[in-house]
Length: 319
Image (cartoon, rainbow, N blue to C red; front, top):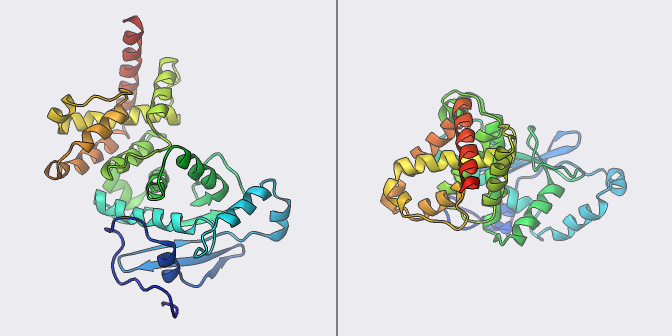
């Protein structure tokens, strides 16, 4: 129900260009409903999508003695005047893109993450956990780092939505497991990062991201040193880039032959190929990306790519 004087939204938001504004988020924000002793559920229902947030309450005593009290205070200061809490707009926009991911890849929404639990007292080395808690202090650091790398306000929710999709792949089950992975289980970080990067390619996203060419080069270095665990994020990034490039080269051999990149990494080559696609050529992109995601579940395939990269590094060293 809309409140008197608030903006009314009578059109869908999934196919629009740009973000849902703080004012639009406020217009569809439901009254909070207590669902746990320390959390309330807030729903955001748009004409074509529905997502929710369950922000954890901040106990005044916990906040007062928190090691990161000054950081928590800074989040309060950063809150947009239309937001109920810091990060509301970026999280709602990132969650709405999960609905868009379902449309892009032809997936049911079952298994995708359409609700997050913002948590403000913990500074973690990861953005989210397996229970859909999102660590807002860590998120703030992540957003600031993306901004330093040149990310625009419009790009940040896209980058973040890739991480949310990444976690959904880690927890994949039921219909999503069948539709995305052919019933197979994900392999370490390889499948989740391949899925995340495939989404960025589907969106033709070229902005800063956590798993980029620099991370891929680090992965190649680790592979050369014999550190080739599928659970290593850098190694997984390097292998994911190779899997995606392999499928793009099969699907678009003529375009692939014309592409050169400064870094020479598979990830940058993938982006360059996708950037050259016409509208007609893009109709083959999603099946191509989905095949790479499926291939990423195969441990034998993973070991083959690792062996090829190690051999390639050895040859480069001897040149």
